[in-house]
Length: 487
Image (cartoon, rainbow, N blue to C red; front, side, top):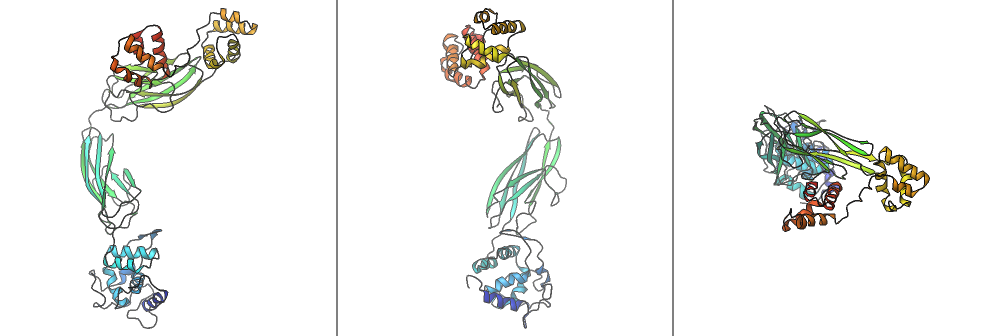
């Protein structure tokens, strides 16, 4: 058998099949034979029950997928041109046309794919006839487990054929008393962008949270959009799988509102915490983070925290207000997190964070001129201008009036004579946590020696306000206050 179809043999075959001169079997305008083919022609290939009746063979029921996308249905005439030109039917086109209606879907898929791609390789054509590669997607081991209001589904998708599939999706139907019809979209979808190789299975998992109480009949359909041409399109549905959810009461803590605004030299945070679940939430903590780049993760200590010792009943809300006093001049990206220590079992553990809220603390009018003068007087260095602006912002009316008069007179003596607030501390140094933990272990004896590195590791995750609080307490010899600062 030749490796490819020559132009001369193709033309000759087309002349015979299309009835140029006398043909063993005539074709009408629609491409269907005008008389039944002899039943005893052609090699011994499997035939369907209607092998002697050809017309339906010219109208394949479904489109095939070619290399470049959707492939229109190919007729038996086109298939037999390809097959007979490769010498696979020595008795001629009539024998091929007689057998074509009985060919398997895999053979038709294989030949149609070659026709769509204009691939005339006779070796591939022979494979299509004798051992066609096939694609067939099926769902196996479809099961579900229930935990509270969460239903976890597991299943395996297999390609039982030998031909790799293209991309497809799997649709999950949460509840349907009867099998969902083809074309109906599922409640959840998994895209399988890489397809599935021949004779390969792949496990999958899907999850439904906050499932209503009751009994649900779930279904799965693989390749719901018929993206993959399969030898059997009728075995893509699995189910129903019955799951019963008892409706066990669970809490669900969320931050309904989170606002931050500048009030004078302070930033005021208003946080409304709600339990939108049906069970009481007992003993949890709310964290407020003044300045973060990324959302906080669980167990991350905030700049301020509020302990809900009495919890929060199902459906109830509570609003708390916290103030960041004399906030340094700058930009803040603030967050809030409820149940930061994961002490409450919730139906949804992913909705506990709110933010960011952008807050800008600007220097008050006249502070830049005042700080320029204060720097020349030696109260601040040039590198501490931001600390000076924060210091200026925090003055009350009496303090500010005294300072402004001294600046107008350009009198450093008058400025130093004013009863002004102490300058704010600089940012904690990088080694501050080493000092804090060393003091807690060796001076305060609040931590054993073997907890020193653990203390340092936890301290470096703290916000600057917590570290500064501990440093201030250390300077005052307040060991207990130091431990409270970093909790």
